[in-house]
Length: 228
Image: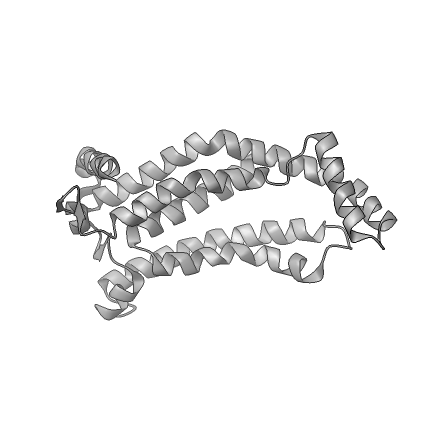
């Protein structure tokens, strides 16, 4: 955690002439972009896997029809098909899993009053009127929804909601292409998963919320480019 604190502090110092008091927030956005860049090969692999799974849908639908009365045999047949075509159903999870350590380190860093036995100076940094170590509940208690800190969260929620809506539309369009036999509850629920980001942003420190918002926006743009 001390290494991450030094990295954020060093980048904030470099960015201070451009961003002033918001330099630490800009540093977090830059670190997030770096993490997403490093994870990009896994994202490309995930998209290739998704395209391969989409290509297998007609064959899976045929297996489902053939083994309609034997679900266990159907599942075995699908696994054998994936194995034969070298398609991993879990490949899409890799980009998210690879980012978890960076997110949790950032969360812990801006939730701790001390780092390496010293006071955590990063907690003094702010994004406009909102401290990077604060949460939405703190902003509501200090000035309300439209106070200085509250407005920062209103803007952040608006950005995350816009990204989630774009992602929802893409997911809904993809869901309409799923085979008719796809379980109804699962098929209807998939497009709304993107909105869970709003809940996370509301409960984590602002620094971690910036990471989530930046990473989510990057991911949506990245998928749009890779699926072209």
